[in-house]
Length: 118
Length: 416
Picture 1 (cartoon, rainbow over the protein chains, first blue to last red):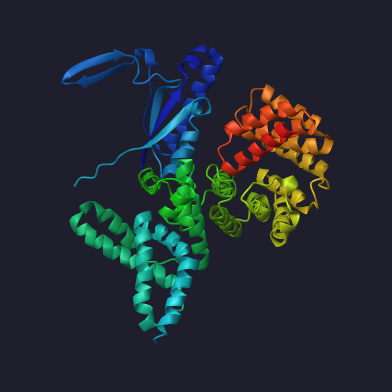
Picture 2 (picture 1 turned 180 degrees about the vertical axis):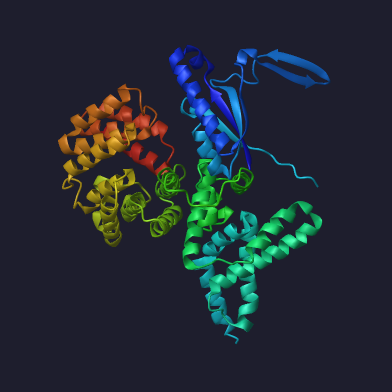
């Protein structure tokens, strides 16, 4: 079964982190990604540019409106994701717990909705 | 080989009480769906009522019921699949499992554990865990649970439906956690059981002090868990619940008023239950590393073994709280320790400890802090401060008998 792991981090804390510390976290991310690639659970994943680069689009009554910034202002921001293959939720929780940001921020696990051809 | 209809009916009723939850737990594993399993279990008992009077009671009734339930479920799925093609994969899976029925006793007990751990899965909301456990593991009806929690039945039904949908759609597995995950997952199960017990023992709102039905359900759950998973903390929790519950008759006066531990008529305590609790405390303390439930049970045991409040072994209780504080450094534990210190070293000493907690900005909205302070101030003869503290406790407390108790104390002090 496929699960999306959404990684929420405090961007400001990231910005303030000394270089050697953030290098260490990047190293952990690299190791984690290699690990789930080797186990075959990695289906995809990207890091995102921080929220000041975000644009939110809405169409109301046929009119497109765009606003600066993310969908919601929150203390932690969506910073990246992994799409993983896991046996079940317990398996997905085990994988998500190894994402480095789980220790600083939080990881939201969402099962992918599968549409079967009728 | 026919049997007396009355004998058969009685046997089926008895089987329903003793084994319907076991049959359900196994059917959930075989069918992979809570609702389908629930229907199948009911169908199986209906089939027994129809068939056993003529065919006789089978040698292995539980195996018969599981097997009947599974075939009934396949029938239901086949009928529905005619109209709903999306059910085909489910029918295939259930059909496969039907080829090898696996219902030996060990497997059945594992199924019961699977059910408990699935209902108490931390990915479900706490309210949902409690409702689902009472519904699926204890077999309470939605109406009974709604009544016990003073919640409208539709709200509660909705909560259970949502939990089942999450189990299905997020694919929460029907399994006992691995060794590494067990301590934290067991903690979640114990927490749910203790919440149910406390809601029964000290209902968070409403007019009765004790809602016994929930306490006894929690004790039944605790007994089941100890039998299935004899871990130290499972012993500890069961001991703790039995020891608290043993004092039930003495906690409420004849006119429904709350009686504090110090003032309780100890001859009303259930001695047999205390003895059982004390034996379990020993198991909790000797079968492995002691945990918070084991320590709290040990504290309750010391209280239960004392002839009176004054003759309680307070130094031992303070020592146990010191250990508990190391495992659970929370202000609530600190507060309870302070109350024990007050008994050992006098009210002034206890009051200083409680004031230190409040000065740190903790527990300011917790009514027990103010009632504990009030009681110590009263003992120290500081009447007006005591009244003020009792009034704060009264404003924060929503439980009627406790409110009446606090009002009585205020009135006593005013007239003094």
